[in-house]
Image (cartoon, rainbow, N blue to C red):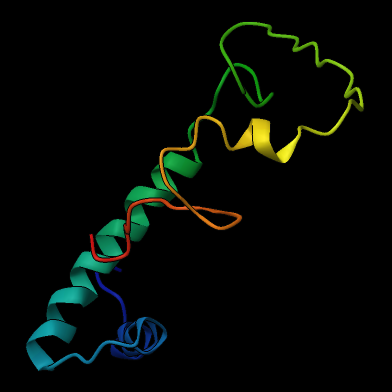
Length: 97
């Protein structure tokens, strides 16, 4: 089979919430089938080792213990703050970017 059925393409379009016209349906019947075939080829690749490779080298992290210390004084914490408003630190507005 070298293309998907019309119903399969319409189902994928519905899941993706996109509208397709007749030309799109015909185009995607072939293109989606090719994509699925390529994915199947990748799935069937045999590797030497089935173990998942996280990193190419062994790396054992040593985590430090969390030690509870004294609280930082408010005045010490605010010493290097460039701008403040009451008890709050003012930062540049980033929402419009």
